[in-house]
Image (cartoon, rainbow, N blue to C red; front, top):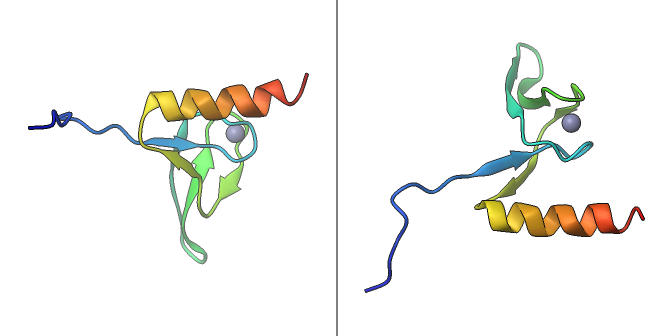
Length: 67
Ligand SMILES: [Zn+2]
């Protein structure tokens, strides 16, 4: 029987600065959005990762391409 983690963490990631402090933001006229607490970017759909390993893989790709 496969081992299933009891807690599945989901990472919401900012599309602009790739930080993980992205929280739901309710706009009265525009509907629900997400806002990054680091760069204050508002987005409709943030990046989302199911686990930290996937997020770190992504980070290494986007950061590696900047050098
Ligand atoms: Zn950000």
